[in-house]
Length: 397
Ligand code: APR
Ligand code: PHB
Image 1 (cartoon, rainbow, N blue to C red):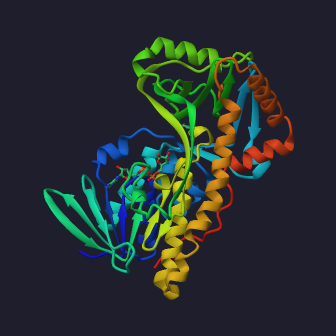
Image 2: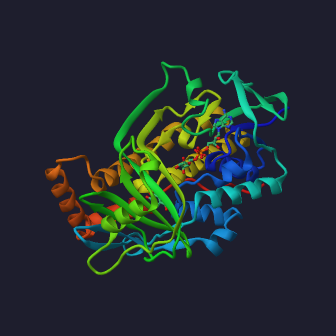
Image 3: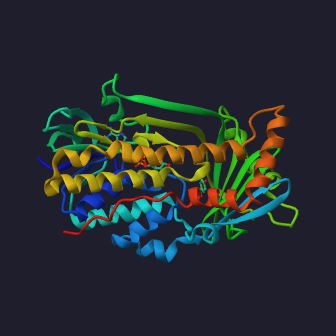
């Protein structure tokens, strides 16, 4: 079997790469070790930057997003019992969209299936060979047999725990890591969202976030301990903690309803450099992780594969290896800015430990400043809606 680009992983990065390459007339095979249901149902964040929305619409996969996605023009920051609004459109001319990552994945899978190009679920990548030569190959196990796929390039879109990053020579790859001393407990509830916009709150009991999925479903998060157990959190305790941390003196509070999903997610920042080793490229969570406070994970993954698809298009158009040389640095310049923003939002909004009164006062002052200075609001807004991405859309062939 032969293809041009072998893609490992069918998360947002791998699926979007396959979609963009298809539009450029470049063949790919996507290999995913989980089942289709697992990949779709996996609960993840749900904020799309304007560049992702524009990309989906302009490449023909934005129809449901336009119908069901919720456009948001700003965000509330809550502290000291009050909510303050930052208007993104006023400060940047751009907005963000709330549309679950699972919906993005569902749309990408449907688009892929419509092209007839291969997308293999429950196919475990066993070994990748020859990425340091012009003829890499992948051996994978699917439907009871081992297959060998020959490709020009391998795209490692296999997430943080994938096999691609460990294939880089140890003396080439450098990892930059920060683990936070807290985690997020997230729930989905059958409750109508009680605010039009997201509310990020710093309370002396810790961080909480009000978000949503649909006009009937509220998504909520609260800061908890890294070693906390979901068994410690019966529904009553979750609601009482959320009400304490989120309710504001203007009478606003989240609506309650039946909780139908709850889980705890650790928080970390991580960047791998470089993102290319000869014929092997990393994209998305395989190369970097952000804490979810800035809602950047999916958006960064999409930005990477836009740069990668554009580079590969130039390669196949006759520019050769030179077209690929800038991939890593182009992505990393933007990734580090998103890392900075995600870290900054995280440190500003989370309780740093017990007996940290100085920190809490400092954070409250920062929130007061950020929600009252035009310059600070513009800075938050332009990072939240996403920094510019200077890559042209794929030319349809
Ligand atoms: N063979 C095949 N597939 C693999 C392998 C392997 N050896 N290892 C991992 N995978 C698959 C995983 O099952 C997963 O579906 O790779 C996929 C990686 O997808 P994601 O983890 O969703 O990563 P990515 O596509 O980069 O998307 C980034 O996901 O973690 C969130 O917040 C993050 O929104 C961001 C997005
Ligand atoms: C979500 O809706 O899941 C969400 C929103 C904003 C974040 C993180 C997650 O910062």
